Amino acid sequence: MKLINKFFKLWKIYAIFILSILLSFTFEAFSFGYENILLLFIISVVLVIMESRSYIFGFITAIVLVLFFNFFFTDPKYTFMIENSKYIITLVIFLIVSFLISSLMQKLHKEATRAQEGEQKTDALYNVAKGLLSISSTKRINTFFIEIIQKNTGFSNYLYMDGKIYSAYNNHFEFSKYIKHIEFAIKTGSHIGAGTSYKPDLPFRIIGISVITGHKIALLVEITENLKKYENDFLNAIINLYKIVMQKEFAKADEENSRFMAENERFKNQILRSISHDLRTPLTSILTGSTLLYNEIDIDEETRRVVLSEIIDEVDSMALLMENILQMTKFQNEEVQLQKTKESVDEIVSQATNNIKKRLLKHKLFIEKSDEVIIMNIDAKLLIQVITNLLDNAIQHTNEDSEIQVQYYLHDNKVHILVSDNGGGINEDDLARIFDSDYFTNEKKDNRRGFGLGLTICQAIVEKHGGNIKAYNNKDNGATFDIVLPL
Image 1 (cartoon, rainbow, N blue to C red):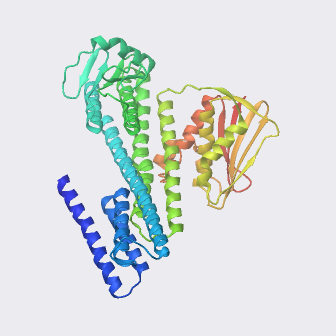
Image 2 (image 1 turned 180 degrees about the vertical axis):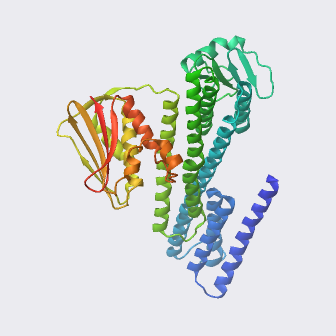
Image 3 (image 1 turned 135 degrees about the vertical axis):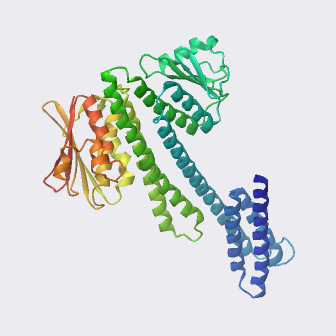
C-alpha cells in the first residue's frame, strides 16, 4: 500500500513538472513575459513541495527549472550560456526564493505533524486514563498497564510487584539475578539500566515506582538506547496515572484510605477533564493554525504573524496547564517536597512576568517594587508558578485593554505579593469558593481553560509554604489576589 502511494505521488510530481513546462511554452507563444514564466515555475516548486513534503525535492525541482529556463528562454537559446547579466541575477533570486519557500513549508509541515502527533498522544492518554480508572483489581490493572505501554511504544516490558512479575504476553523472565538493581530503582524512584548513566550495560531500563506505600513496584522496559523525549514523557504520564489508580486500589484498607479513594475519584475526573478539554482544545488550535499556514500559498505576512502568535500563545498556555496538572498530581499524592533556597522577591516576580509577556497582547502590566530588598527562604520554582498562574488568570478573565499590576512589600515580618487588575472584578457569590476547583468545574460549568485548577494549585503551594492567599474586589473595579508568606 505504501509503495502504491509513493508511485502515485511520483506521478503527481511528474504531472506538475510536465504541465509547468507546457504552460511555459504557451506563455512564450502568447508573449506573456519571462517574469510570468518564472512565477509559474515558483508555483510549480510550491506544488512539488506540498506533494512530496520534502524541501530537498523542491529545491532540486527549482534547479532543474532554472536550467530549463536558461536553455529555452534566455539568449543565446538552446545553450546554457547567458549573454544578458540581468538574467543571472533573476535566476539567482528565483533559486533563493525557491529555497526559502521550500524551507518554510518544510518547517510548517513539521509543526503540523508535531501538533497532530501531540493530539494523538493526548487521545491515547485520555483512553489510558479512562481504561485504568475503570478497572478495580490489582492484577487487571497491572496487566492493562503493561499492555498499554507495549501497544503505544512497541517496547516489551514487565512489571515487578512485591516479588511477582507481570508480562503482557505471559513471557517468562528470570528477574532474580537483577533483584538488587530492581530494589535500588524502587528505593530511589529513579531510572537505571539501558540509556542511563547507572548500569547502562543492563539489557533493559528499570523504572522505580516508589510512591505506593508498603509495596515494591518497578517497570522493566526492554530497550538498548536512550528513550526519545516524547517516549519518556509518555511513559512518565502513564506511570503517574498508574500510581493514582494503584493508590486508589490500595486505599480500600481502612476508613482513612476510603476517604483517600473518594478524593482520588474526584481527582480522576479532573484529570479526564483536563486531558479531554484543556489539552485537546489548544492542540486543535495549533493543528488548525499550522495547517492553514501550510496550505495557504498567497497568505499575507500580517495573517501569518497572527496565526503564528496564536500558535505560540496556545503552546505557552498548554505548558502552564501541564505544569498545573503535574503539580496537582504531586499534591494529590503528597509527593511535594519543598526545595527551599534564599531568593530575592525581585527576581521571583521578574521571572514570573517574563513567563507571560508573550500572552499580554494589549494588556498593560505594571510592577510596583518594594522599597527594600526582600530575601525569602522559599521554593522559587513553585512560587514563580503561583504568580504566573495569577497573571495568566488575570489575562484570561479581563478585557484585552485592562491593566494588571504586581505589587510586593514587607509588613509585620511577612511578605505580601498582590496581583490586581481593573477588569470588572469577581462575582460575590464566587469569591468564597474561588480556590475550589470543583466549584467551577462542576457547579459553575465554566468552559474557560484553567479556571479553578490554577487557583487551587496556587493555594496548595502557598499553604505548603506556611502562608495564605485570598481574593477580593478592589476599588479599581477589578480583582486582587493577596499572597502572604513568612520570611
